[in-house]
Amino acid sequence: EPEVTQTPSHQVTQMGQEVILRCVPISNHLYFYWYRQILGQKVEFLVSFYNNEISEKSEIFDDQFSVERPDGSNFTLKIRSTKLEDSAMYFCASSGLGAANTEAFFGQGTRLTVV
Amino acid sequence: KNEVEQSPQNLTAQEGEFITINCSYSVGISALHWLQQHPGGGIVSLFMLSSGKKKHGRLIATINIQEKHSSLHITASHPRDSAVYICAVSQGGSEKLVFGKGTKLTVNP
Image 1 (tube, rainbow over the protein chains, first blue to last red):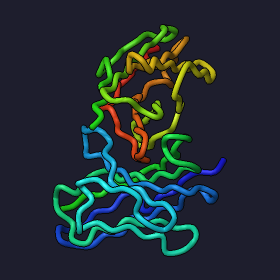
Image 2: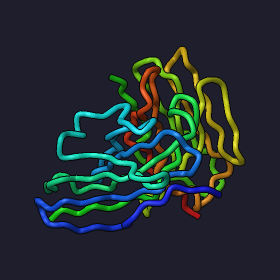
Image 3: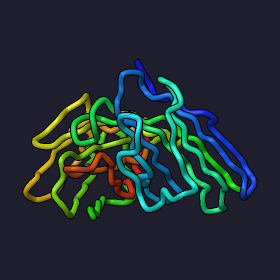
Image 4: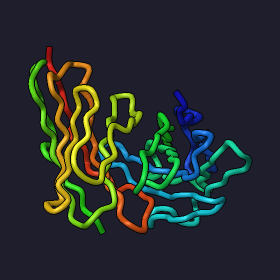
């Protein structure tokens, strides 16, 4: 069964460092997302990506964040200068159509710890 | 802005019991999703529905659009059903999901 894969599963980084979280969405999907979940809190939307551009982003997704689809398979989230409050589980998701029309498939998540 | 509320927050059941988890939302939606999150953190989609009822194995999801309410039922619950069950909604014109806080279900043998 096709699945969304994320790497790494865990990342520890020092405050101020740049991190890149990687995702391989399901191959024929058109919509890609990043969500995050701070420990003990609900999952929050960060950004959606369609047709090679950001289609929607939340207030959390400020200038420190960027997304890229560098080739036909990878979808990355970059945090330029990490802060302690960026520590969270980051989920990548993809869907064939948008969330209004089809299920979203989530990766297993990358646990980011900023020290 | 859509607020998604789930109840109960925590639920403990004995194996075999019938489980109901509730979700209500404040603004009209285009679809409602039920998801399952296991202790390891991964999220799995269970259902997406915009009206009526869906069934998959021992899981049943219903939605009442007029009342802005959905329920997830688990029949003949089993310890392997222990997980966090999350309701999330999407609104017309937006592709993002707005999540509830989740219901932590523990099924004891």
